[in-house]
Each structure stands twice: as structure tokens, then as C-alpha cells.
Length: 280
Length: 336
Image 1 (cartoon, helix red, strand yellow):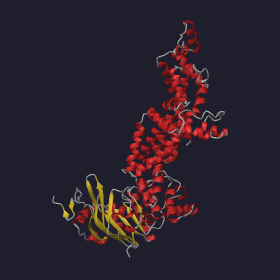
Image 2 (cartoon, rainbow over the protein chains, first blue to last red; image 1 turned 135 degrees about the horizontal axis):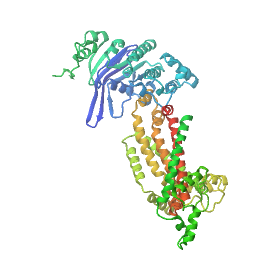
Image 3 (tube, each protein chain N blue to C red; image 1 turned 135 degrees about the vertical axis):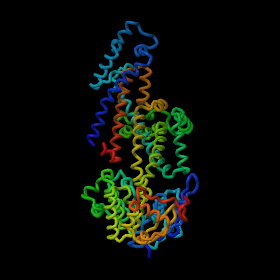
Image 4 (cartoon, rainbow over the protein chains, first blue to last red; image 1 turned 90 degrees about the horizontal axis):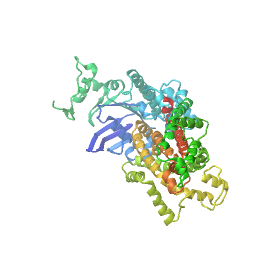
């Protein structure tokens, strides 16, 4: 049984200039222990899809799907309350801007503890112990002291570690990482990615990693979905995708990698129509 | 925190001297001679005029008068009122509790209704409630106080007879002032019905004085909440599966409170400075009415002293607001 199955997901936003289709009938499937990467440029609908599954889109968005099934449970038929019992516990998400994603008014310990209290009903003492464990797991030094810190007293990398600790606190079955390294320094990016992959292997989580970085895809993913303007361009095993990309868009995307540059100029992905490259 | 408080307190010193200059010059810039006003319609002989001028010290150069005044101020002497012949400090503190009591009721009224209304309006943005509440807030903000006060008196006091028209307590109650707060003194007196009489006298002035702060707080809360609700950490809180009341009431509100607390602080400062119109309409024996009377009598010491004392109160309120900032948002506390 697949961990998460989404069929024909469409997201439309009401805008002043009429409805805008951000996601046009895409299907996703993630198995247990599998890492799925969703790749695409800005505006391809990568994040929107995940926020739709989590139920985190603003009221101006209309979400339609034939099916959203998590562990055999139909999420479309759930009440918001039932959905909240899964969100944050069985499906957790980390975001692109770790510093902005943590509430500046509360200590990081409090913010992690909130998840433990709400989902697992843990008491104060047990919570404290678990927070220290979690901070150790994400390799934050001096966790007893650090749990009393506020987000502004930490670096971006440390904040992302806290976000990861918060996300894995209830041992989720699926972790969605929305560009988890984009806002970080290159050296920190590598550390965070390694941490994520190690936790994924240890905890046996399914994982969806959203990125526009093909390097991240190569290092992490089992399977890849390439999206463009809310449509799926290609879905393939990671090795096949790099070795033998089928969609012209994927080819363009791979050709645009800096290491593939020839001469002084970097190739760019031409504007596309979903059926192929637009006429120049 | 201690250093932060100390730096705020240090700022009081130059501000205080600035205020003494303004408070000293302001009444003297107005036309009208206190000695002539004091002597009334019959007028005064040139000899007596000169004598009184000398007695009050108005014959000396302005700069000498100023430094003399400040010197006395530093010793805690705010001078003696020309009109009442009693120390300004005594007059001020005899009336100040009435203003504080009314202001606290008005601010509490504004906060208890304004903050929830602002939150609901923000969460249900564009809804009927939002539009209705913000429409009423705008109307409340634009309402001329004297008209609003009279309207309420006509409806609730004279027509329906539900509330008293003026004063702080019914005439049949009499007891010594202990705290100066009529509601507390009424409780202490133990007289039957005294407390409810004091509260009933507060209802209309509270509503009239609280209307503008209520409108300002509701609008400020709404806009602060709207801004905060679109922040990333609110998305995180929702992604944690927290119930909406926790996301809004804890995660969003705590962050939205900073500008709201500023507004509450400013409004409280304004109200404590004396609600001249409200106090006048309801014959409320507070600072606002006293200042107005002193001003019309060109009672220089009373006006000067009143202005300085009010300014000090406003400064203290501002320091409390600054401390509250740090308590609400630790990022501010540590940066300072």
C-alpha cells in the first residue's frame, strides 16, 4: 500500500483578474521509505501541491482531487479536526525560510513541546526530556541550554535543525521538505541535507523533497517528478532521469546546470508550452 | 532589562526640562492677566495691582521666574494655586484619582471589546462582521464626543432613566475618601447600594470616553492581525496541526500585540491627561475639568503644575509600554 496517493490534484486561486490554475491535475504517489523529489522552477506549483495536501492554502484557493489517500484514509472525506490529528503528527512539513518559520515570541523548546503536548499528550517532564533528545538528534550542541533560546538567537542552520526536530517529534510517516536548504549557506546546505537523509533512513519515513536544485535531487531522491506551470512534464526513477531524460523541458533543465556550461554562457531553459518548447 | 529600564528613565530628565519650558511659557503666551482676572469686575487700584504682582512674583524678569520655578520644582514644590490658594500638588492629587478611575474603566472597556472585535474582523476578513465592525469603528472614531455624550444622556438617562446623568455617586451616599477611587471607597464604606451607584455613574462616561480608543484599538488589532496571519510562522503553527484558536489566540495574537499595546499606551496617556469634554459633560470632577477651569482663570501655577504632572504620568505610561514590548516580544528585549 502506498503511503500517500493523490489523484488528479487541481488547485485554482481566485484572483482579481479571474481564476488562476496553479496546479492542473497532477497525481502523486509516495511509498513507505521512499524519497520523492518534485523539481521545477518557481511557479511550477511544487509547494502549492504540498500545501494543498496539508490543507494549508488560503481560503482564496480551491482544491479539487479525485483522491487524497494517506495510509488508506481518505483525507478528502475528513473534517478539519480529523485532518489536524494527522497534520504535524503523521505528515510533517519543513519550510524554506527557517528563521521566518519559527515564531519570534516563543522559545524553540516551547515550539517543539507544543507538538508533543497537542499530539501525544505528553506531560511537562516527559516533554522536556523528549525536546532535549530531539535537539540532540538534529545535532544542536548544548540542547538543555538551547531549548530556552529564541529563534533570533540562533543561526539559519540552527533554526532549520529546530524545524526538523519539530517535524520529526511525533515520528511522522511522511516528511515534506519544501526547499529545506535554499535559504542556507552552501556548507550548511550539505549538513542539513545529510541530516535529513540520515533521519529519513533511521526513522524509515517516506519523504517528499521539493527543490529546484538538480544537485539535491541527485543526492537524495529515489524517484523524481518534474513540474512546469502546474503540469507534470516527466516522472522517472532518479538514475533514468539523469541518464535519459525524456521530456524536452527536463533536457533543458539538465542542460542549464552550471557544470554543463560550455564556453562563457550558461544555457537557459527556453519558455515552454506544455507540449514542447515555444517557438523562438 | 535593568539597563534597558535605566536608559529609559535617563531619557525622562531632558524631556522633563523641555516640558518645564513649555509648561512655563504656554500660559504666559495667552492673553489675560491673572491678577486682573482674580480681582474680578470691580478692578484693582494700581498700588494693589503692583503689590499683588510682586506677591506672586510676576514683576520679575521671565527668566528669573522660570529658574525660580524650576528650583522649587526640584524640591517638589509645584507652587500654590492663585485661585484656590492651596498647593497645586494637593489640588492635582485630590482630583487625579477620579480621572484615573474613569480612564481605567474606559481603557478596559475599549480593550475588552476592541481586541476581540479586531481579531474576528481579521480572521473573517471581508465578511459581514468585518465590514460591519470596521464601519462602526469608523463611525465611533469620527463621533463628536459632546454630541455622543449628550445623545447617550438623552436616551439612557432622561428617556429610559437607566443611568444617572452626572457626578460620581448618588447624593444619599456619603463616606470619607480613602483611595480616591469611588468604586473602591464605596466598597470599603460598606454602605448598601453605594458600589452599584458608583458603577452606574461610571457607565455612560466610560462608554463616551472609551468609544474613540475602542475604535482605534479594534482597527489597529485588525490590521496587525492581518499582517501577522500571513507570516511564515503562522503557516508553521497550522502545519503542526494546532487548532485554530491556538494558532490565532497564541501564535498570531502575541505577535500582533506590539502595535496594539502601543496604541493602548498612547490612548491611556491621552485619557489620563484628562478627558476635558467627557468630564465636562458628566460633571466629572477630574483633571481635565480642573485644567480647563485653571486655564480660564489664568491660574499660572495650576496650569504649569498640571501640565508637568500630566506629562510625567504620560512618560511613566510610555515606560510601562516599553517594558511590555520586551515581555511580549523577547527579540526587542534582547536587542535593546
